[in-house]
Image (tube, rainbow, N blue to C red; front, top):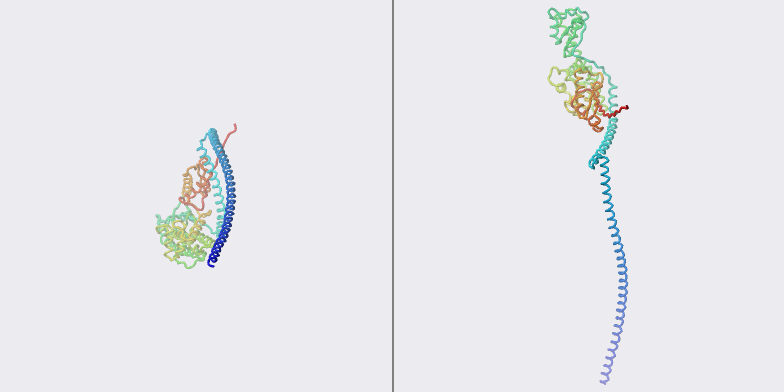
Length: 476
């Protein structure tokens, strides 16, 4: 029994081992088949990859071949261009040499000539452009300025009284001549002593007596006193003293009336009576033949109108215009310019500082501190510059004309200079071969600037620079 059991167990073990062997062998076979299949697939993939790489290699070889061909072509083209460049350079040298032979100019000389021509052309264009801009600006500014100034002057028309340093008095009868002289010249000496004037009696014109004095007030007193003595008929020292005093009182009243009349005309109130009298004295004062009180009234009117037009203070401009020459009332008695004297007078009478600032700049002694100062300066120039307003001595006129021509002739390239139109235009002729259009314009501006700085003149002086090129040939 035991033996059978052992045998059966052994057989079972052997059979089980065999079955296990058979199962393992099948599994291994399947595994091997899968590995084999995987290897076959891998081999196929590698073959395809190899084929692809081979194809790419062939393409790269073809590209490399094309690049080598292109490189060869580029080298050939480069060589050809280099040869062509060399040929062109040689050709340029030949052409340049021929041009130099033809034009008789070297390369540098030709370059300078071309640059010079270009520079001239550019200067011409710049000059034309500048002239165009200046014309447009001048037209606009002048149009507006004319409108303002013409409007101001249309509203103002004052007479101009011209005075001198002498006054003529005609006797109703030449017999009075002896009475005026008196015994041993007693009457005439008394008269001259009391009035401060000089009586000039001409033998050729016995009916004429010339009253000479730089002080117009004294001349007027002498004239009135002389008239009173002639009417009275009794000419002797006591009577002369009496009539001179009467004349002084009369003149004092006239001065007061003149000052008050000027203030009334302008509608100015609150002025000190003593300052009003000083203003009235300007009636008997003249400057360049222009009555100073009339001129002051004219400046005041113009300044007021101009200030209204440009938005400044009309009242300040008007009062400053009226008193701008107040210093001339006493400038023969006090040291200093009439502007400085006028400033001290106005400060003494408590006039507003803004008005003083506006009046003190009319002759350029002080820079303008406000717009009213510029307006008073312009009004003063307009009043003094308009035709017939002022007169100047022959010596002053000749000197001004000489100064104008001298300034123009001091510039290089100027051939001739003529002051014409009574010194209101300076005609300058320049050398055409030395001065071009651009330089001519520059000379005109420089001459105008120097005239403004060095010459005193009324109104405006026109500088006319003429550049003319003439070619003359004769037919024989």
